[in-house]
Image (cartoon, rainbow, N blue to C red):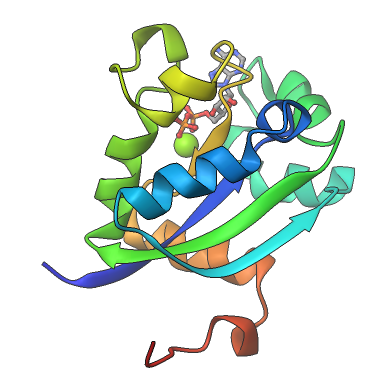
Length: 143
Ligand code: ADP
Ligand code: MG
């Protein structure tokens, strides 16, 4: 086990429903420490860059339109084995297939509007955190 950090985005659907606080409370109750936090409305180029790996997928345009339609809340989460632990806490991509009690089951609407993003590997987590937060905002802290 190692202390890790991972990137969480509370997506426009969840922020629009005023459930961003409930998502953060769920994460704190699950043992994640919120070590950086910001609300922002993603410009198109930032959303496209973030999801560049999905550029060839048929849903790419829909995904960028969704992610830019209203503000998101971006957070860095810290915990032992945070990357895998947060993927488990999120649940499956499609809320209909997500396990009971997961974030996507509780707050997601459908496979596109699924409430939250989470990094899928430690390497990607490092890149995604750097994409949203300057190094001084995510410096290691004692507390
Ligand atoms: P995850 O977010 O679970 O890592 P992916 O990386 O496969 O899932 O997809 C990224 C995001 O693209 C999903 O969270 C979802 O918002 C959107 N998405 C994935 N599959 C579809 C689909 N079939 N139709 C519409 N949007 C999708
Ligand atoms: Mg993914």
